[in-house]
Figure 1 (cartoon, helix red, strand yellow):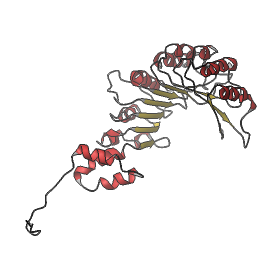
Figure 2 (cartoon, one colour):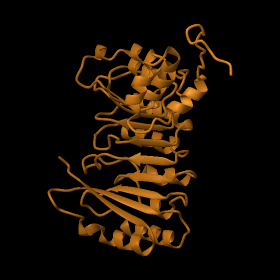
Figure 3 (cartoon, one colour):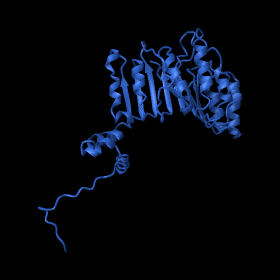
Figure 4 (cartoon, helix red, strand yellow):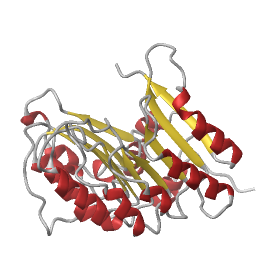
Amino acid sequence: MASIDAGLASPRLFPLGQDILYAVLENLGRNPSQHYAHTALVARNWTAPAQAGLYKCKILIYDADYPPEAFSPSLMDAPAVQTVANLIVLGLPSMDALKAVLVPGVKTLLVRARVTFDGEIESDRPLPPKLKKLTILSSRWCPTLYKLFIVLSPQLDTFSTDGPWYEVGEFHPWMESTLALHSNGLKRLGLYGKNPTDRCQITRPFLDELVLHSVRLEHLAVIAGAYTERLFQQLPSSVKVLEFVGNQEPIPFEDDLLEAIARAGQKTIALSRMVVFSYEFGDFGRPKVYARLAEACLENGVQFEYVGYDPW
């Protein structure tokens, strides 16, 4: 049997290929972020795959209480950061910051701008090719973010926004028209936040028009004022989930909604789940105003879910 003199033999290296490393590091089990950090220190050729895995986690950038210069766009230039898949940016300070966070790897982006945010979206700006889910949170009206939605809309599967429906302003017709024109390719559309007050009404029920052209829509979350009974009468057969902001009040056009639930029981539409969000004080529990909906859902094989939350 041949033998090797350990003192004379030079060590042989069996480096793992980058594709194999990526595959191995994607299956690290529990607490992957901790493992990625340690793995990145093992060897130089392990660093890039480990960093890519680390930045697949959800990354939060919070800049609401700092001066604009506190967020340096150059931070997003690092190769590993360019692979970030899930990004939350709260308090976006500037257009330079917005451009910086549109990294090539991002698939899911939630963004809220600072009050002082302003700027224009460049028409020739390269877009993240993998971005499919966009959420805009608006403490005030920010047209730039809706222009971002317009340019991204052809590639999006999911879009969510909180309006701001409750703010008074001349921007409502433009915002609502934008949603009606650019949401018809979505699988999921979420309108969240406060229901409009009597003082600030939605300009027109734009969801009625939107669903007429939405052949892919599967999940729809709505707020009062954005629709009429026509929404339920012409609900796309593809819609599986409906969500409402109830807040202790009956769902508008309930009779037409009940008819849509009946059609789900007849299997002429795909509706299979309904969710009602409502604020609660203490142990208020599910209000009786949703009893008819819950009963109709039970009779027609539609899952009914009531979600109470503390408004404070």
